[in-house]
Image (cartoon, rainbow, N blue to C red; front, side):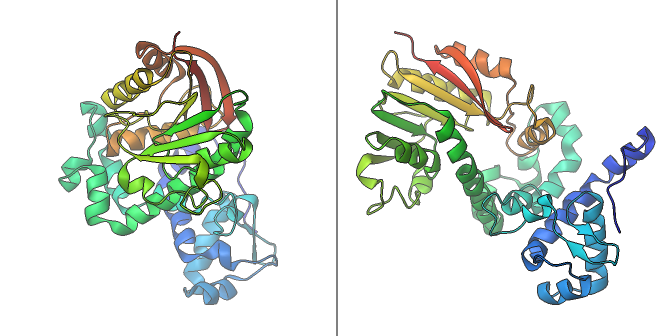
Length: 342
């Protein structure tokens, strides 16, 4: 039976951390093989699972034993495997699935970029263009369509999962209109419109993004009559007026993009309008290991950064927003309540 070891001594702990890439690779392999989907509710041998996922039994047993050390799957006394809370999150049919997030964070380009982290730290710039000769998103859509699809599915999964948390948190009583700026496919907007049946909504994002909105927002969808979809780049212009503006996870690419986006919101909004900025933070958060890792990945691929509380407040204040209460959405997200001065 494979068990999770107690807290090791510093030397062993560092050795385990140095091999962190092995754990990430093992999670990726399990996700790509579909092991979690193949494992049902009864203890199952590696041989049975190997048949189901078309793999060799002995290497699969080694993979599962490694993952069991981290609490991802568990090994029984008689050498079979069962689910754990974490392994269930790799199932595609789990509404809280992290399968595509797991794949996204371990895509082939990440293994090229991570070894150059020291270069990025020295220069303060991304290493991606040096590796591939073009920008990150240009590379994804021109040269790596499979990775682009994984990215899109990971972002869609993440957005759907957080949309309900955001809708539950925000009280928009008294507002008649809400705009989701850089809102992707509009999952957050759709959840808010479902919560407030008389509210009108606007979704603004790049043309290629809003061309495939949440089914509820499309023509013929349940919310279509209350939605305006605006193709555009919030860094260039925000031709939208609303009582409430939602800005979620779009202020992390670079300082200039952040500055322009916030100034465009303030320029477009009426005095007294409410602006809710929702971001991951790299300080004072229960998800520090995750958010700080994403922060370094942003440095590598686009030269961006996740924010501290202070850095985000500074940028919102510089844009002319009046910053109010900070609220916890979930362990990964914080919401800053702001208003446009009267």
